[in-house]
Length: 89
Image: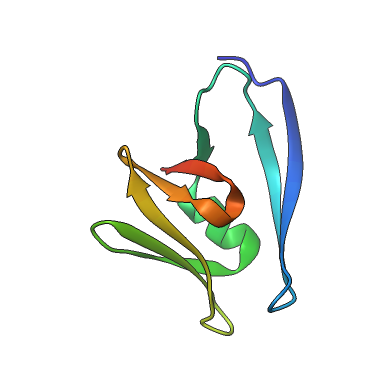
């Protein structure tokens, strides 16, 4: 599969005024799911992940505030607040 572009994106959590910038995102048009590297996302955004059998939480390292909650949907984590499903690897 061919990488078409490399870019960045950011998430802003208005209730906590926390901004997360994700660098070096790869745009691969032929991939059917959004993929995210847990270790790279954690390094880029100062968060940590907590995994449970059917749920995943993304929490801020400094405040321990829960920023995202994903639930298993067809073997991948679905993050409804992001309006997307993400396959964590």
